[in-house]
Length: 432
Ligand SMILES: [Cu+2]
Image (tube, rainbow, N blue to C red):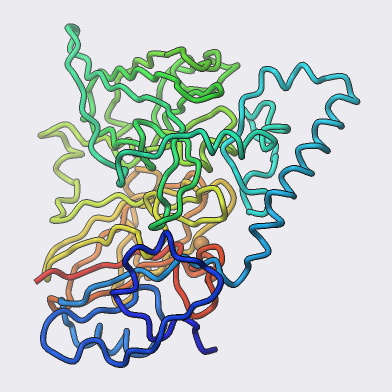
């Protein structure tokens, strides 16, 4: 399985976007790292020298990206738009012939641009409405979307204090093109412009107010997953509220209590097969009240990191909105205690997440401390679940370990071959 990418060096990473993709014509250049200094590796390669360098514990490793991984299947670029067109025509004919064409008028454009991907199919979901027909407009919509102006999600959400003491957050729902791997932009449903949306972090006892402003081209609503809130605050259209229509806003207002302490999240609950699979979610973490019994038993880790496992349109598997090699690494130092919060944001698949070189302890599930924590090196994360893991960073400074899904087809980006690595991989890097 000789890779056509072999021999490519860091220099060729420059300006990949404009390169023609027909063939990989990079000449072999021999050893790159012959002199002291950074060792340049091509991230995602299974080549043996990758592991030799990592075993040496060299923290000077520089990872670079490969070129666009599409040249093996150029015919897809021709077939895909045709398939979208044919699908659109079929849907239109079907809908019109049943005399329910009027429903199309209220259904917004969808965000899934790929008819050949695993996402974007019209699954029936609890709150999904008018999903059929949306793919028809997806291509046109995607072309009109602005590019995201931020490159990383999961940033701590700011808030203002209202006169009544409430912590008031604002989430703006907006569809953007999101750079899932370098040079590849996919249509995404975001909150405040990033995948994941901002992290809401509050303390038990806090009065929380969240204004959701909908700038999607379709309705939405936000569900506070794992929190005990009144049904009219729960974010399910038709049960406690009406969908938030484009241009409208809705104010959620609730208090978080001691039973809400832990790792939770929020996500769209309208057209969720597209909106959640398009990135519309974020972390909602509730810390214990200072001095409370919960606070006394809480873990005090040196590193506290949250990782969403999900998908994005086009067949991408993502950790915090990015596919490897663009997944943000988890940086640790020798001797630290690491608290990793995992959140299953995929809408279809369970992901058995495996950490190389470490045994971790699962201390909480769905935010709630386990009476009997257990040890694993692989943990299945199903859609909707959250897990809190603790591990000790025992290894030497300079070490690098992958944390990855063990369904190996989830370690490839669309168009990659078997010698490449993408998708659900996050590196744990020991800083010096
Ligand atoms: Cu997986």
